[in-house]
Picture 1 (cartoon, rainbow, N blue to C red):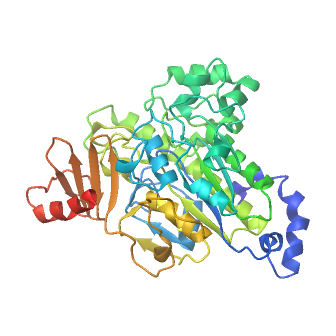
Picture 2 (tube, one colour):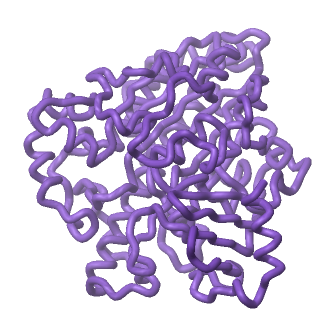
Picture 3 (spheres, one colour):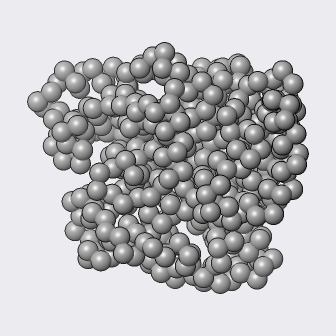
Length: 465
């Protein structure tokens, strides 16, 4: 293992080494020994919040160091034009759970909970024999700020076999400053850290406050979430295939990083946001340094999960998906966070690797994380969801097809996007259409709607389907 990945594993490997070695001596993996004839893959879904599509080492001139992401990508497929079904937490995650596009989803914004009675991907996987787990900020009942101190409220009803659901960064403070309503704030209260954390958050500007959090590394939310996922895997039954979603809270604002995460980041340079008139250059630089530090911390956790699976003999039979629920404007166009139809808001990284996935592939065709729903069900041999818009990526992953759709869709409120991997149509109720050629105009500054009616007509057809 790489030294940087071994911190949480100390004391863990020695407990398993003897047991792990026995199946290898017999010529089979530990997982095959435990499972018998069930060779269906496990699913590891690493799902950070608000990670924009281009904040990776694959963007020229951008100093982002994510060796674990690159390792996984080299083993599988990297999608360069992936978008989310809606650039807001609850709608995006609800679309994924139900397998439906935003325009047909019952969750239009963060003020509506996912209906428990609706069939969803988690229940279908559990019914198909999977041990379904999740940790972090699920955001499936964002309107109801009560997660239970154990984080298990509604998890069985949604289809989870085990899990720990916690509040997001701001939700945790708003709901649990005095009395905790979720397991993360409950942990901080138990450790005597809640008052310090609440005071820090209430004094922070969401983006310009770039000083370190007073929390120690092992109480920082993403580290706590990462460790919870490891614990869930440790206690998962060995005789079943499993699904685990690790819903990290970062790199969502505020730009709070630990002192250790700050080391090695302040000497790096990043390009300023495009078309921005806010703040000075130093402020923008520090914001982008902190955002990078959060992304790289998540990559360290990716590496730890990879090493953990390798040590357990499960790496080869685990489909690993790395993505995000939506992006982050990060000051481009004087805009921040998400909810916008522009690429930094709707675009997300997407890397998939595992059994049957053709390695070292870069896929430029349009993709949507909505299609992860059908992909998991396909690999699991589970039934499709009723009226599902999601389409399996399996033929693309196995290099039997170049793409699974001609256009990917996104939406929020009264706007809709149709994107074919090059041309993007933005249609907003009551306003003129916007059409951008992202190959020649990645900043989306030149509206081609009047010059290219043929693309408007073609992309409109997907919105009407």
